[in-house]
Structure formats: structure tokens, C-alpha cells
Length: 154
Image (cartoon, rainbow, N blue to C red):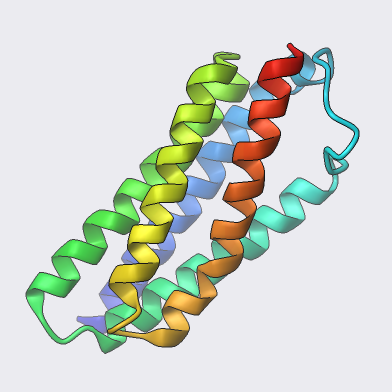
């Protein structure tokens, strides 16, 4: 049962990564035409950061699954992880694919809130699992700020 759960976790994380990457690539020509703030990281940084964040997320999910004792905890945190994956992909769709910068800000805020809820819910079950999500939350907080500045500049 646990091994199947790890395959499902890896599949969800990998699917989110592939879909987000594909949507991002679809809007890259547009992205190069908009006005970006000077503190925007170089394009080469994003795939490295996101790969690391996805790996940390998968590890956090595996630690949580192994430590979870109750069906209630598994249902709640599964819902939060899947919601987070959907919001993550939706941001790429809104920002890069549809060029809806304002709506992407709203989604990024919801993504951040879902991460805080996930960290809070995981903390009593696996402290290390929750800690592994902190870099993701920090990056998304930065993304909200960056997305907002881009919206204001364009």
C-alpha cells in the first residue's frame, strides 16, 4: 500500500511539473516582450528552483504519508496537496498561457494560502515534512510580489 502511495505522489508531482513547464513554454515569447522588474531572476534560475521545490514537495508528501495515522489526516492533507498542485498549474495557465497577469496574482495568493494550510496541517504529523515545504512557500511569496510588480508595470 505504501509503495503505491509513493508512485501516486511522484506521479502527481511529475504531472504538475510537466504541465506547468509546458504551459510556461507556450508563453515564453510573450514573456520576453513584457516589462519586468530589475530583480526578476534570470530565466535559467526558474527551472532549477522549480525542480528543487518539486523534489522537496514529493519528499514532504512521502514523509507525511508514512507518518499519517488516521484516515482523516490522509484525506485532509491529500486534498491540500492536490489543491496545491491544481493551483500551481493554474498559475502557469493564467500567467503564461492566457497572459492574465491580474488573475495569476489571485491564483498565486491562493497557492500561498494553500501552502500555509498544508504546512500547518502537516506540522503535527511530520515536522520535517512541514519544514521541507518552507522554501516552496518562500518562493511563492516572492512570486506573488514579482507577479504584482509585473502587473503594475504592464
